[in-house]
Length: 395
Image (tube, rainbow, N blue to C red; front, top):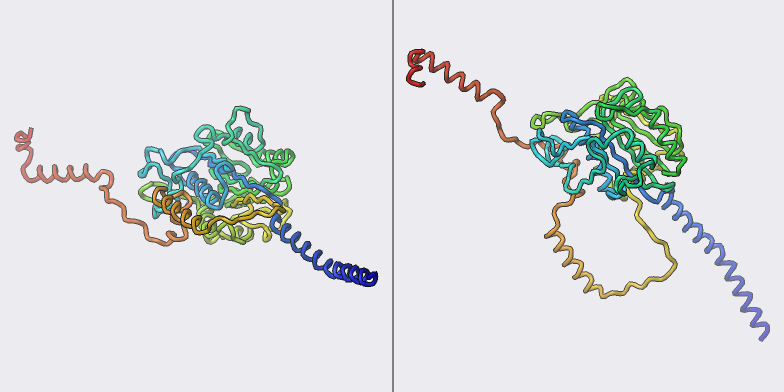
């Protein structure tokens, strides 16, 4: 009896020793998977999208910003985590031939204004002071939540800016400007106040690379549409609108983002190559020396997408509903939603499908002065035929 007891204990100990390596291996694999899942170290995403230009001839700058806004919403960043700043309202401009729309492509099939655009700062609210206050969190207590950047030390932030600029500055509404030193100091304040984990800065303006030359805070990656001394050129002229619809750099970035989905494994190195000089005419630049991770290990969705909220639990959850009832109820609800809900903003026809289509035929309208010229021709023929003496029969 004693021998049997000792034998059983020995077998149990031996089995435990044999299973120990397998248990540690499984635990190691789980840890590796968890580390890979949280490889970027962030738990939430924010976007600050800024158009600094007013007036109709700057239509393309508003379209640039709204195009990026559409892309980050499609990839999962909600409006509550987007601060959208537009210096002018092109959709309601009296010169707009198609009111309540802003198009980014000459085919006029991609309305980037959409049905549910939430503009947080508009018109004269878009100032250097308000922009810096949003970044640093130094805003009045009465400011609504939608106008706040409520980020923390686990936030990945995308900051996109477009407008007219020069060597070391970006203009705001042709009345003031922000310098690269002011921008660098604002990012340093954000880092000291633990307002970001990683930051991606993109700027589409002339001499855009000059805006990130003075950055000195860690974990910042920067991209620009042009080098110092170069202009950032426009793209997609449209005769009906009378202006260019987008800038070249943002146009090709948008085309690139249309191929991205929330599960994409595309990395930042791919984004660096989207607009070579042969397409942009200018030379896009990027800076990665302040960034701790290798860009090839940084997914596009780490900044343009959103981290899904996941709750880890050790409890066993039993899911045993009547599958037939649930499935029929789900199909019924889905049919009702398809019948009642209008086309959502993020479900519009993507650029990738319309980029090579021929422009739609526009309604013909007589050119300016055509009617006046026609009347002049009629009067000349009348005088040549009947002479001045017959004028008394007209008046």
